[in-house]
Amino acid sequence: MDDKVTRKNARKARTRYQDGLGDWYTLDNAAMIMPAVVSPRDTLLFRVSATLDAPVRIAALQAALDRCAARFHYFVVELRKGAFGHYLEPHGSRVLVEADPPSPCQDFDMRRPGTCLFRVKARESRIACEFSHVLTDGTGGMRFLKNLLAEYYRQLGEEVPLDSDPDLLDLDAPADPEETEDAYNRYFPGSYPHPDHERPAFRIPGPDLPVGQYRIITGVMDLEPALALAKSYKVSLTELMTGVYMESLQGLWLGLPKALRRRTRLSIEVPVNMRQFHPTRTNRNFSLFVHVQQDLRLGRRELSDIVSKIHHQMRCEIDAPSMARHIARNVGGGRNLAVRVLPLFIKSPFMRILYSYYGENIISGVMSNLGSPSFSPAVAAHIERLDMIAAPARTIKTKATMVSWKGKLYLTFGGMGQTREVERLFFQRLASLGLAVRIECNLEDS
Image 1 (cartoon, rainbow, N blue to C red):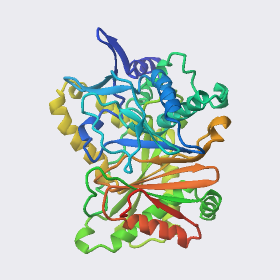
Image 2: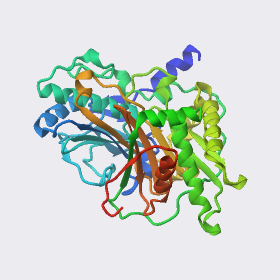
Image 3: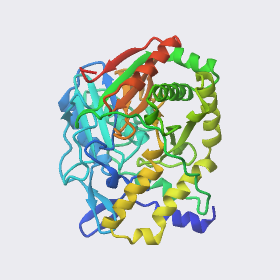
């Protein structure tokens, strides 16, 4: 990349600005489309949470939140509508710790005036942070949770050194400008071939849950047997669990009436953290995805065939040049002058069409692995469990996430449909493979 392109990309990557009224932020490239597609059901909120070894002390948590909110001021924002696009401006009120209801990631409308785009909730010994995907991705959300927990234990009188975790920030220091950069624009490759368009994918049929309900089913299992099972298939843990998910969707499809089997392509979206390819300190979105696929017209596949195919698909797709094709398409469209000068009331309907065409219409499900996050030893000693919950999606119906912590694997399905068939098939299959799984659900009638 030549110096001229690099300078232009750096200029385009800025999201923070000031005018006569104060600070404001542009949306990053991934976030630009989100205000057009958000709804009371598809809130675009995701969650990261920690369950501690003692009940949460709310006063100490509120003091920690006050400190972190001042340092992560670029998260303490509201969505605003301009003539040509949305932007973010500082939230005018103090962010308060809230009680945590049974259904997470609900009762949220980012377009409602006065709505802060993240929130912190507590219940018994659990601290949960929910973020709008307009703000950040799983990496940025986990960084905030790490700093919140570190400051929480400092408020309780414990020593948590900054150098004990590379993600801990000096809460008294000003934010690095790079923390708010739009890394997609910074690493825009210029003229690059775009990804091939994909056919519409099969999606789980059936009625939705009532508005305000989000069913969370978590399978808790020992990590070592799960890793050993993946090793026996010569694949990673993510590839194995994605394969079991694919096989479960295949089983659901085969059991449906012919009229509901018109879509014959299965596609599971696997997010990819782009920070592994491009150095950046951004706490905004910087993740893309690969789609692993199966053509159901070719007949039933055994699990061994499914996971082998997924393994090779992911190895072929997850590299810097292949992922750059997605950046080229997404950022290139946003830089187009004709698109930029369109008024927002004209632009928004087209964004919804593009989101359907390139987004949820070509996805059968999502499998995201947050891995095994590292914490400061002083904080880790108090954490009994970590969880991640994906943002709800009414059309896809289910999304799955994984987090590993202290020898346990927490695999969570977030469901918006009344049917639990995919989850049932998934966990039954794990049991048949020899994994002992304890099932938890947040809704009593599920």
